[in-house]
Image 1 (tube, rainbow, N blue to C red):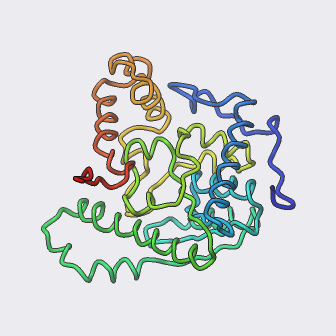
Image 2 (image 1 turned 135 degrees about the horizontal axis):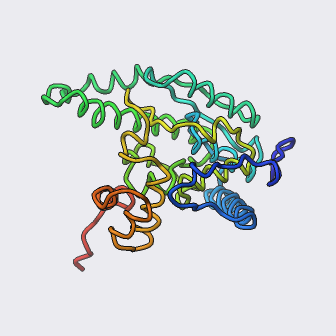
Length: 294
């Protein structure tokens, strides 16, 4: 059930994406499909909570569109009392992101905690000699600081969720999961992932349908683990192009040369996405184990 006072906007009032924002491929749902998609996702969340015999859900809020959309879906599915937010800032996070995260929680009317993790990350890293492995600064930041930060965020999220008998909702979208743009046992460590089948473009559309502000729908995504640039700079292409390559090449099995023409990119870029997909398979599958001998 929807929370009291929480009324999604009607289709006629939705923020309309411009043509530039849907190039090179328009993957948006139709009006009837978006209604069905939201119903499907909210039912999924309710089913997961019921199956776990939980009292609600925990959502790690970053101020970005994915966690914002997940929180809105959770409130739509369960009501405000059953949804709790947790905000886990680091020094590298922009103040704007953290204030957006708090504003999302306050606009939805859900309770939330803010817990800084810098000291925990620093203490954890200081307990190992990882910094002495002659790694470059970028390698150190990405492999050690970034992954450790994500795993500490996961640990803190579960600590709060377990205390309140809640399940943890993941916030990863189809593009991120398909390319491995998650940390194993970090932001990838969740109980369920409502957005897992939605391309980034479709997440924005669901967000707009649920009444998320235009500024957040338009907001440029950032990882927030280390002092890098945007998601798109790290991935090597913008999300709309990545969505299209995934839809046509990974999910659609079209030849790389055809996909390059359709997406106005290069065969090398298409193959780069394919490599990211193949190399991150271990992040999308359970740990391997031997076949039983007897």
